[in-house]
Image (tube, rainbow, N blue to C red):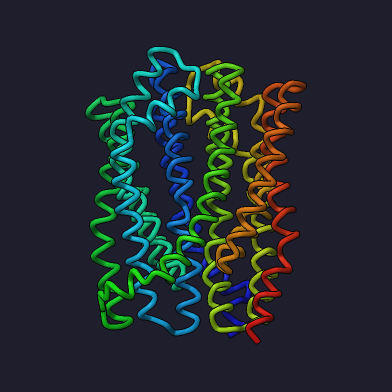
Length: 440
C-alpha cells in the first residue's frame, strides 16, 4: 500500500484537483476584472467587500467539506461502505438546516456586514445588490462542499475536480453573460454564482447517488443516519473545524477591513493582489486535498508507515511547487494586475505592493500542507487551537506593523500569519503519530 503514498501517486491524484482548483480563483479574477474595468471604482469595491463577506460566511462552513473528507476516508480504509452513505446524508442534512438559517437571518447578517466597513453611499447600494442574490446560493455552494469532500475522501479526485471545474467555469460564463450582455454589473456577478451553484448541485447530486449505488446497496435508515453518538461525533469534529474556518476567514476579512482604514483604492488594490495569493493557495491545496484522503485511509487501515510516507512526500511536492509559483509570479504579476483593472490609481498601488505575491506563496505552502494532514486525521482540536493562537498573534502584530509601515505592515502581518500557522501545527504533529500508534 506504500505506493499510494509515493510522490508519483500523490502528484497523480493532485493533477485533476490542481486544474480544478486553478479555475476557482479565476472566478474571483474574472469578477474583479469585470468590475475593475467599468467606469466606477464603487463597482469593484462593493464586489470585493461583498465577496469577502461571503468568503468568511461560507469559508467558516468549510467543515462541510473538510469534516466529510476525514470521516469518509477513514470509513473507506476500514471498508465500512454503509457508514460512508450515512456520513454523506448526515452532512447534507446539516447543509439544509444551515442554508435555511442563513436565508431566514439574512437581514441581520447584512446589517452586521455593512456595519463593519466604512463605505460610501453608492458603494453600499451596490453591496446590497450583490448580497441580496448571493445569499440564496447557500444551499448550492454548501452542497458542493459535501459532495467534493465525499469524492476526495474516496480518493476519486477526478470526480471531485470535475464538480469544482464545472461549477467554476459555469460561474464565469454566467457572470460574463449577465454583466456584458445584460449589463447587470454587480447584480450580474452575484446572479452568475447563484445560477452556477444551483445547476451544479442538481446535476451532481444525481451523479453522487448513482456512484454510491455502485459501491453498496443504498439504505436510508433514519435511525442509523441520525444515530446520536454518530451525530455527536460529527458535531464535535465539525465544530472544531468551524471555529478554525471562521477564524481563517476572519483573518482575510480583517485584512480587507484594515485596508479600508487607509483608503478604498488601497482595498481594491489589495484585493487584486489577494486574488493572486488565493490563486497560489488553490494550486497548493491540490496536494493538501489528495493528502487528506490518503492520511485518512492510512488511519482507517491502521498503516503507520503509509502515514509517514504520505506526510514526507506531500511536503516535498508542496515546497517545490511553492517555489515554482514564486518564480512564475515574479515574471507575470504585472500582467495579471493590468488584466484586472484599468483604473490608474488602483494599478499604481497594486504595482507598488506586488512583490508580496512573490514572497507569500512559498511562506504559506507549509501551513496549507499541514492543514491537509490534520483534516485527513480528523485531528480537529489541534487545528482549532493552532488557528486561535495564530489569529491572536496576527491581530496583535498587525496593530504595530500597520502603525509603523502602513499597507506594507498590513502585508507583513499576513505573511507572518501564514508562518505562525505552520509553526503551531508543526508543534502538534507528534499527536497524530501517537494516535496512530495506539491503534496497534
